[in-house]
Image (tube, rainbow, N blue to C red):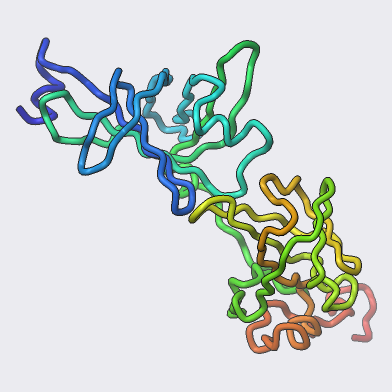
Length: 269
């Protein structure tokens, strides 16, 4: 029988749900079945997962999904010390035992994970369609550049510095390589480090003095002797764009906007 025929049958359905989470290059696969199942050459591990109902309506922000899972569930565990810096996407599929045809029930991304009293955690997700309906950025008539650094024609690899961590204390990370540039040079940039194969954590650099930088969030998983990459920041001015990144032709601002308003009360412009 086909998936559709089984779904419509009165008593032939034996649904099995498959949860596939993607985080960078790492993939987590789980199933609602009571034992591991192999589908499409991939093994899905059995986990206790209770999900809310899937709703369809005109308001996309109400089409989210909630998963109730044990506190030690692999995805919930990623949020116990702080939210991961990379996106966690979920594809929820279903098939019927004895029928290999898969159907996608829902897809989206993890928004947050909350831990209540006891051994349970609740994962909140939003559907993929929400990001499609959000208003896009609007460029305005402004002096400073509105472009996101390293998405403006500047190649991040050309400015990457590989360093060995010497110390981590709270929100401060130290490495000898930071001192290779004057204080403040790395502000507005970011550092990244691989916590496992194919999975990266990133932290925004808020300040730089000597061999140390301050970051926005606790660098979970980063310790002395580890290797990290870091990149300089930009203050979005034409001078910095030209001198620091040699990208003046790609500057997105309008630095020569007149300082005097031609529509002001002064008759002499």
